[in-house]
Length: 173
Figure 1 (tube, rainbow, N blue to C red):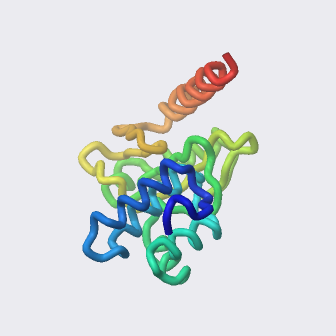
Figure 2 (figure 1 turned 135 degrees about the vertical axis):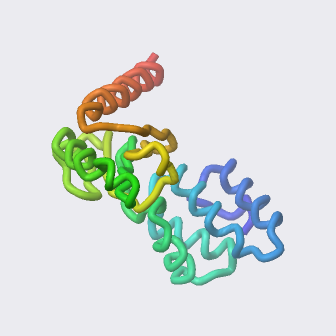
Figure 3 (figure 1 turned 90 degrees about the horizontal axis):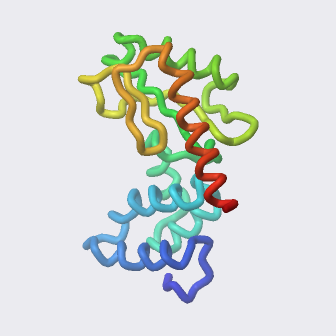
């Protein structure tokens, strides 16, 4: 697929995909990076995303879905602007991750894999984010927060609400 072909992705991302597949001896090896980049741009792996990536790599849509469903960081439905991932693997669990997760649920008033009505936050429990030495830990989009307690949750949420307001006022200035 070339950048002249109609794409659901921005021209910049389509060009990046075209270059990415040339970096691997087997085109399929570009699948996971492409899925991550696509999710960053679109917000989730929609049917259209799956179809286009499959076409670009010469794979079936089922092949793409099978790989995508393996990774907890890839999602098939829209998430909030700030996707909160609470690690509940053994190290985090032993140091209070479930209490932390429950506090986020209470503060946001959402269930597992839910999103707030305003679309600002979504919440999910994940297996491991690789911060075992600093448990319990969370990841908000690409930001890590570690050595947390439930009492810190309101401040974390207030920080991201403030970021959203600041970014919103920049966009309207």
